[in-house]
Length: 195
Length: 78
Image 1 (cartoon, one colour):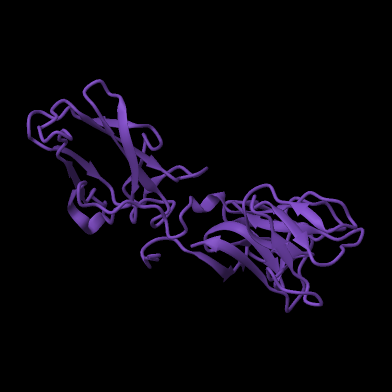
Image 2 (image 1 turned 45 degrees about the vertical axis):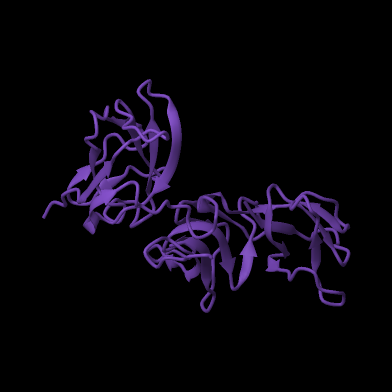
């Protein structure tokens, strides 16, 4: 049975000086599908994913409305994709944007009450990667390609900030330079789980 | 306060499944960040003799064949 879009998103654009803005737009973009064609399984292929869709302009005090599929019924998923929703003025200049995820069962959603989606990690999760660090072997200082979450020595995660004889490391304030409390040998590998 | 919703994808270490009868190709339950072979993280895209893998989305290709009793896990978003 085909899945109908279940989210009715509304937004009432108003001026910071308490007047009804009028003439503003929402720009809605489905993001996060990666290299996969986003679909609603058994219903449709989303032909305009990653392409900004403009809704508006707002006329007087009548809220702008958009009908959306919830991110829980979009593949890749559930809840892998998300919407970027930007508020634009009457000249279609972007004022601000935020990220949101919706359940298809949500029904009516007022953007002024919707909770922005930033993920539970404070950053876009697919940016996390396991990558090789640069540095000399033998040596003690290694630089990761991005802010370090954890350092691995020959594939084993090391605890941070412990004293030798426990193999450990310290992280410099730049968040990418790790200093081991032991010397590596030729043929060793130092990698980082980093952003 | 950090809020982790069960509705949204989470970073997890989860077992991978061999593709068919393959001993080299595995699928993870979600987008793969890193691959673990018997608990050891594999640096990706290395040539033999280093044990390594290539990753595309949730698909993992090892450059070696696993043996009975081995396990392949993924640090993934699922």
